[in-house]
Length: 505
Image (tube, rainbow, N blue to C red; front, top):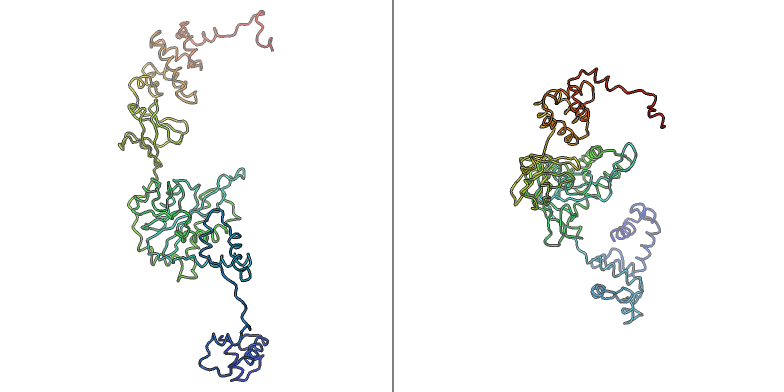
């Protein structure tokens, strides 16, 4: 309407031509001619009367002649209620709508189109106001980044992209993890707090299993280890409602930005380690946080330094260490299994259920919330960590360690210790040599310590410290015979009646 009035003013007051008016107002000459023609055919005159407003002017210039009969709109509210019925369709509702007065009814396509327009207008989105340092929104990106084996070129695993953003300033933290499992999820929070230099008051995660054990609209059940981490940092967890993405709209928007700004830039790059991927993500993350924003003054970092950082709660004195908690039943061998490694507990707890809490370096075992033992964490699959005080007395007496065997042999003599040590080192595992060593050491009961020592020394001189050699030397009283004589006796016999092994080949 403003341009129409300018056209009329430039024509009747200034007296410009149609072409000049079009150049002044960025209109085509034909458009100017049409406006002036419509004005002349109307009942209006220039200057316009004060009673003529924009609506009246538009009606006078662009009247469409006799009004066409308006189509009858359906009852959209009733439609919405009816569509909630099981088996109800829009086609059936349209047929019922046409049955009342088909002449004034819309066709099926327009019927559905008008309903969709009405439905969109019923949705309301409340703009949320975020307080500085109050909420941290957390989620994972949908796309992943493959980590490739440099030797074979095969994909070892797909790294998950963790995203956390502050509500007030959109300051964003991004990192890649091996998975969305509990430990990766919780330790990503710890590194986020370290990056922010403080702790927000509320965490708003999605309903993944690592955060919420049982999702519920009003009373979700939180993962216990995740709750422990929140208690350590003094913050609360308020997960988004299931199937309500608007509850964490900040996280959804941050994920979209990260996918476009970071992941799309990495799509042609190949990564062999998680550390290499995170180093590359860190560079792009800093660029993202330092980039000027379109809707807000300054960059995300500038807003963070101004608003969020002073409002965050301080970090606690100690960094949270992830503790994996699980329950296990003590077996008859008074050991419990954790990550394919067995740890001993007092034998009196056989048959009881205990709680295992494992950190990065220590495995602690509790019974009725009382600490009963601790072990150094071992990554050896199929191994055993056994403490002597956990064993029954009868088992302690039967347990011979390599140190105890060497100490026993040393009391007999240097030669005996050398033979025992050779047996222990010749086996892949020291326990495999226990029976052979005990058989040698127990020869003192039959032959005495002095003869055993002499036999062991002779076996070492012959470079044959086997158990059978030591026993043969004692059996034939050869331990005191010079080694040359023994070697002579052990020379192979040659005779024309002895055919040898080559005869049978």
